[in-house]
Image (cartoon, rainbow, N blue to C red; front, side):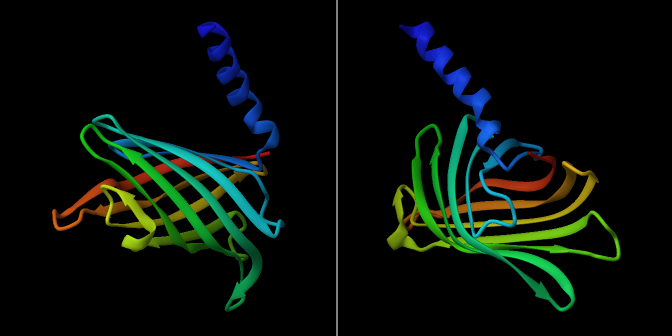
Length: 184
């Protein structure tokens, strides 16, 4: 019975890229994150899921749902999305989560083919937070360079913070990051 569950999990993970648009892997000094997005930039929606392991046995999961479209900022082609990112996290003594509202934008630089900049901000007030979280803020900034047609390298900054009701706050994940994104 145990072997069949493990086999099912391994096969499910192996099949995920077949249905994915891109897989994103990133590292900070204290964490590693994997993200799978299921639709490309030409789609009207973006759905994704991710998992972060933070040193000290902290586990953070997210599920994303955004409406997205093409636009321009100045003369720079941009893909923007507005929607929700649901978080769930577990630490040794504490756990919680939130449904954060926000969005993202990716700006491409036409004069330097392959160069883009992405920013994302999501916030959940206390009414959309649960467990030990009183509110939650997520910020991610990155600069990317597409090395080949279906892969890019990036560097940036990730900040994920939650407040506790009257007991201060906790940086769930924060730091300078580097990683790669592979497109299917």
